[in-house]
Image (cartoon, rainbow, N blue to C red; front, side, top):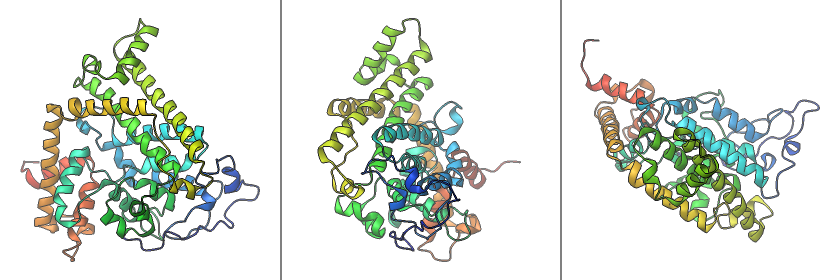
Length: 400
């Protein structure tokens, strides 16, 4: 995944806009001095003329929404495998919820909503089928071949695997969007990424927008996993009584609306929790910004993490996270499905490794060193239901 062009290619901001149309500077004039700006982007891997009637980060968001990988998220799992019910969250609905939360925070902090939305919508593009179970299984399969990190896979999707444009592979996104997608990265992989990996080696931070998307991700999945856990019956309201963040808002909701119960009471409680987390995040981040007073994006990068919750709310959120790990993610029914998912992913990988001719031609390579990574790309790109069908095609004999 080494870059084919420098990450410091500058954007061509001359021309492109229709006469009388607002410039990129005009569209982003309201932003705080520490926000990321399209006109100051470190550029795309392949130079392109500036878009008309939208900013560079708006163009990134639009390319992500129109990508094949984004559409696949509709049939990729969060916790519950796709066939288990139509009302449980998928990677697509999760990404939309992250974007909504992140935009709310960005608007209040006067930073770039379009960049934070692009990062939020793209952050899970590289996730495997079957959620974390699939990711862990694929990482195990790839242990001797560089491992598998879903953040790196998301980067591979937008840099190389999408095939939409005649001039280049991938989506050719801005440096700042790609930086935000790369939430985690091992030092070994960071060394291979050039400018994009430098912050992991130097201990520097990404943009405020990337930090917002990161925390919004946690707010979204913790709360929708509570909602899905209750909907599935794997969690109960009685169990959640031990979690302060839940119980305080549940009690307040019952007190204000004594006539409601069931799903409405759960929704009211979750809504209040999300609001508390967002408001606290905005207030605490404002304090951090005032304390460190970054005047530019470069000063944000040199500061400690600025987007954060207060100590009290962070502790309550951590307690909720531990509760979910113990009572939902390790519930025997979830573990049974995770075990099935693991068998499917490992079975597919092993079959394709043993005989690459079973792969579609575009994923076959005469280079034996490259073949495992191509198999990982193929498996990671599958939806839950496609992975199950592919497994059946390879291993199940029937009369059809």
